[in-house]
Amino acid sequence: MSSYEESESKFWRKAKENPFVPVGMAGFVAIVGYRLMKMKSRGDTKMSVHLIHMRVAAQGFVVGAMTVGVLFSMYRDYFAKPIEKEQKATQPK
Image (cartoon, rainbow, N blue to C red; front, side):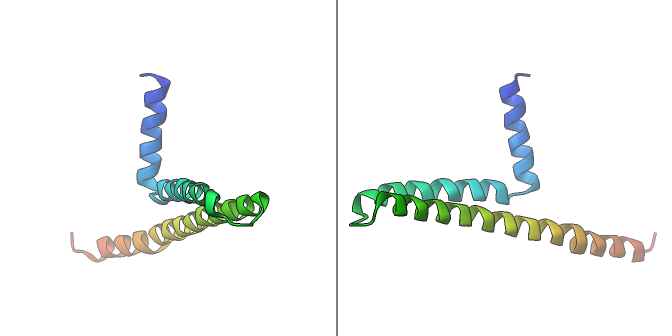
């Protein structure tokens, strides 16, 4: 198996474990692409200010996706799994 196939399968495995990683990556690419297209119509805004706004928006989306992902994994680990264990323990054998 080549290293490309290993890294590809590793990416898909990680994406299944935490689905917010690809969402964050896609949002980052979408925001950067949108802001680059809007660069022509930025008016009299300086280029540096436009690029700073683009960076802040993209980083904000990624941080938000990471936060939601952490909250989701905490819910799954601390609330969903203990409930499943309690249900299995109370079921008659």
